[in-house]
Length: 144
Image 1 (tube, rainbow, N blue to C red):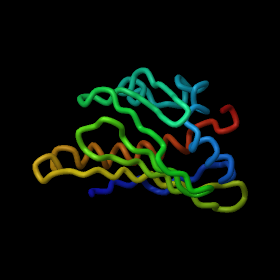
Image 2 (cartoon, rainbow, N blue to C red):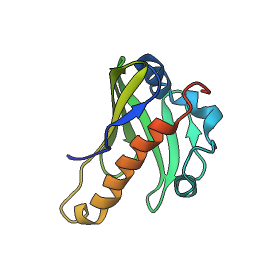
Image 3 (tube, rainbow, N blue to C red):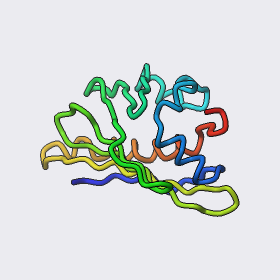
Image 4 (cartoon, rainbow, N blue to C red):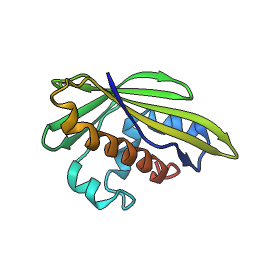
């Protein structure tokens, strides 16, 4: 399993609030088109669908990708797994309390890649993990 991690990002909210929002994808329904999302991200993912335990979006050139929460360890870990993708893929959110109502977060994208596809997707997955981490820091946790 290959692993692509974001940088450690600081979120200016307590770990309990961050965990509560990230572990319940439906809490994002009201912010699907927030201005804080970078324009290139909005264009790539298009419409986002939120379920109680899932997030679905378009991932070019793959098509529709659904991530479903498969593990919750309060307050520091949330694991989402891709549904109906031809390759095993997980997105792991690791949270830690940094004090003063601040949470540190790391996004880890784990995917099983064969040696032929690895060179083609390694850089986009590395960039995707970093952007995913940056996105976590920009979400308006109070508005959700």
